[in-house]
Image (cartoon, rainbow, N blue to C red):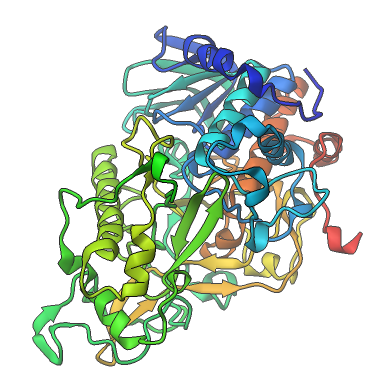
Length: 558
């Protein structure tokens, strides 16, 4: 159980794997009204999966609970163009996953819609000659790889079970005893890991957390709070009013009536969410982009005005990040002043009820599918752009249970723990360092826009920050620990303790896997030593993490 070497995936046995996944150890509904395990993990995101695998390898019983019907979070939900920053900072189970992706695509049977030699990935994650890992992939490929890894580890996974957010956490003092889902099923454990994007378990456990942007003065930062910068911005001169020049006519759809606060001011705004869109241009595998039921062309009036303000911008990659994935598919992300980010619509999501979240997700889906339809059909769209989007459609072989559309909204940021240590801009830029690293982050400090407002009579987006230029830096063990007096057997590797702008650098799928593995390692060691998580000897934790091939040092300074 302690072997951490990546396993060569047996993709030729995919049918058997699928049968095992759906009929064996992974249940779509619980078969009993109570579970008991050493480690209970809530959230089948990339971080949750890595945590479960590590717990099993350390000979601990583990149950992985996924609130939805799909595992893998964004990694299986469309984010195939992996955000890394520095590949050498990724080790352990996280790197194993990307090695297994390469093994998957080394099998010629998995190249159905294009020849392997025809595909050339690009951007920051281009796979170089001789690399042992691959960093771009289809949603279905990521799902198959995760399923195989979970099956190999013998993980018990329970699907479609949401935490009861009113009475779902039972505590004895500062210790969580069990959690309860909406079905009434209970999960008792010695250690608990919240691996959700939303931080629902940690919130229900009563620990301190924050939603929004801290003021710069809170942690001595310069890129937190309100930031009116040039990134993904409208050019000067785009009119915000329904009748141009007439403020009494009201604001065009998508613009908030809020005023611009002083730079660096804190607030409760959340950076924009979107869907990472998987399309294909293979006719045999394509479902046409058609008019959504709730389509309203007025939602895209600002985009039409943006086309007019940018007459020399007629390339598709000037309005989207249109990245090519294997098998003639895409991972499409936000770019420019008006794109896939649904600005102003994420703020209620972190604290919203499950029902309200569904409404927010559906609103994002309506907006995004409507955006694609607008490009294919509206006469105001420049011909070059319209003809390009018309070449594409939804893949028949992706998200087959969800009408070929990802069920996973890109929740870039929700709640953030306020734990034993808070990661800040100073850590990202190397001005401060930690002495208890459990992983490395390497990405630019990255926040998408938080609001779209009127500034000096013009449309402007506010909140985008993209500041890099620093080497990989360590993430503190204490930043995944709540304060000891609030919860002493809970770890939070996804909604970890970080300021808004530092979280913008840390919040990448490979890093969540790294932190998930480290969280499970700490949990298992605490059980073995009969110590609390906060009393665990870091030197011993570090030794085990290094043995399991985690990267804990700045590779540029070795």
